[in-house]
Amino acid sequence: MDILTRFTFYYIWIYSFKNFHAAIEEYEKAIESYRKYGIDEDQGRNYIRIIECYIIIGMFEKALDYSSKGLELTKRKEDISGIYGYMAFCSFMLNNKADFKKEYKAYKSYSSSSTPNIIPFVANCIETMKLIDDGKFNEAEKKLKAPGMGAFKQYVEISLYNSQERYEDLLQAVRRLHINRFGDSKGSFTTDWA
Image (cartoon, rainbow, N blue to C red; front, side, top):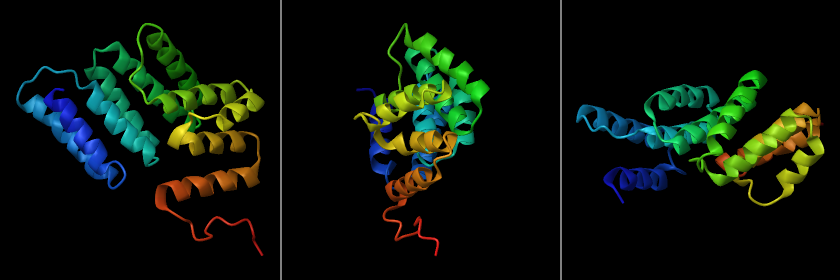
């Protein structure tokens, strides 16, 4: 395992559930160190980890900014595919359907020739987003109930329920997201309005 991989694993495990902003800073330091010392190493994976951090904390615009930078600096097809997958995810969450379609197509194009560098459950979420985009709501709902959706499931649920105007289910999905990110909501997302 090379030093960059060890560095990456160390920070993702140390900071991932405690402080995503600190993890982002460390990945940026790694990228800057490579530049500073003239190491001609593909930085796609560091950018992917930054993108993942921003997605987890719901900062989809920032994730897209880093996606663009990552695409400029990576050469590996699996990293390019992964970045396009994350871009599709973010564009979908930002309700930018035109970009979602374009990025999804690029993601699938690169995925056909290599295994994408993307967390498997995120790949499942992207496929479910495609079903929602195609108006296949029943299929999307079945896929959401299947195992393998992971921590981003609530984002996809929110999109599905919002597109179907199922506001009670939408509220519950937002509550689950809040609990997963911050712990018990202590009743913050109740439907008892009285």
